[in-house]
Image (tube, rainbow, N blue to C red):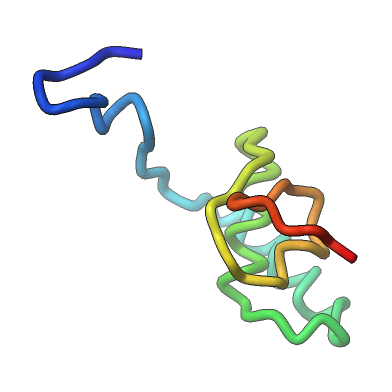
Length: 79
């Protein structure tokens, strides 16, 4: 990773991505099907976009991400 004088280079840690329409459509279909999850539409869009990008970790305390195929950080036991 690149380093700046003040620490980590922010560009090496995160990046912004536009959400394609196909991801929003996939998220909407899953949102409608998974009525028992009680998660927000935004959670479904984030999870679908992560899947498309091949991202498997997310920084969150949101318990809804336990239902998606991602690892939440900080790690919480799913028991």
